[in-house]
Length: 170
Image (cartoon, rainbow, N blue to C red; front, top):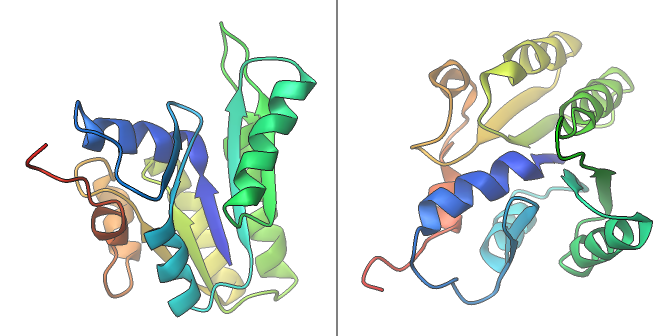
């Protein structure tokens, strides 16, 4: 199973993108979500059975539904889109990702979880999931991942750098 901290992922991609043009086959809304066909392909090769994507957006319920529909269109089976408040943001993204990932691990729903996140706050979650039995692989951008998460990479743990390639000459 794949679990994506979508806000964190979109912010990391924004830094990687800089002023360059958006790569082909990318789906991106600044500070809300990012996805690419290459990430989808990597997930297919890794035999990811379900992709969970967590993010938040400012706006009404129609706006929240619009973002959820956009994520479904790119193959995210279980998007979780929360209302973001101007002053305090949304903590529901991190908490919901953590409770759902740990719940799936406890119910023995996967052997390997892929976590796309770079925040050190996820270290206790990764450790708790591993105590339940499954392995966890953390994927993120090299420049944006917390060093505390680097120990949880399996194989090519910085897959996001390869899958989110931005043309350098632009």
